[in-house]
Every structure is written in structure tokens, then in C-alpha cells.
Length: 206
Image 1 (spheres, rainbow, N blue to C red):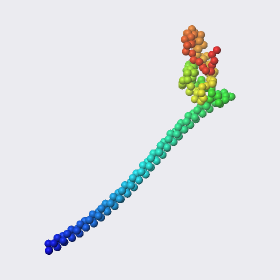
Image 2: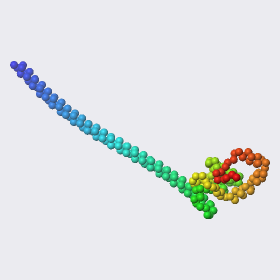
Image 3: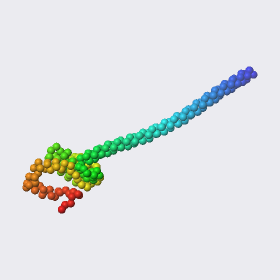
Image 4: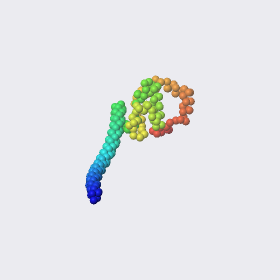
């Protein structure tokens, strides 16, 4: 009888212990569920913050690209402004050099070449003039054309104006060109040059 009572007591004690363990486990489970919920909420907030950061980074990237494009546009406008100012200065320079009355619009249609600035002596100036004219007819560039209004022209020049004509004539007089033209060697060289002649669209051959 006593043995049965002791067994029943042990069973009750064990049940009580199991209940306590179950209650502790239940509380632990609730705590873990709450922590999991907090972690999930924190993860959702972190993901939301990450999305906001990514959106902000993309916005800043687009804004930076827009600023870079605007900067390049402004730099291009500055270069164009500098180029136009240089052309305007050259235009005014030629306008002041040309005799009056010389219409301003002619500077956009007629090539004006400043002979006096083509060299330091007669030989340099005459050679530069001939080479520049030859390059012009061939559609090529030449350093002597920097002393002209070529950049201002709209299309092919309709005519040519030479500044410093008297200086050219004086150079020709002071060079032995007249005597050279009368030599046999010159006539032979001219005959050989005949097949390589260059023509101008502004001069009609008779």
C-alpha cells in the first residue's frame, strides 16, 4: 500500500515537473517567436532602407550625369564663343585694313590675303604668295593662308583681294625675276610645267 502511495507521489511530482518544463518551454518558444518577429521586422526595415539608398544612389548618379552633360555643353559653348570672338577680331582687323568703301559682307565672299605679313623678305613673301594661291586652288591648307579671311568665307571665294599690292610689285622689281623670265632655262621650265597647269574657277582661259 505504501509502495503504491510512493509511486503515485513520484508520478504526481513528475507530472508537476513536466508541467513546469512545458510552461518554461512554452515561454521560451514565445520569446523566440517574438525575437524572430523582431528580426523579420528589422530585416524588412533594412531591406526598405537598402532600397531607399539604392534609389538615392541612382538619383545621384543621374544627377551627376546631367551635370556632366551640362558641363560639357558649357565647355563647348565657351570654345565656340572663343572661336567666334577670334573670328570677329580677325573680321574687324581686315575691315580696318581694307580701303573704304569696302562692303563688310564681301569679307564673307571674297578672299582677302595680306601680302605684307607673308614673310620677312621679298623671297619669302613671293614664294609664300605663290604657294598659298596654289594650295587654295587645290583646296589644301597653307601657313600663309592664316594671314587671310579664309575661315570667314561661306563656300568657295567669289574673288580675291590682295593687301599690299605695291609691296608685291616692289618685291618683284627688286628680285631678278624680269631677267629670269627672259632666260632659255625659264622658257624650258615653263614648257615642262604646261602639262601640270592649275586652273582657277574664277579665271576664264582665252
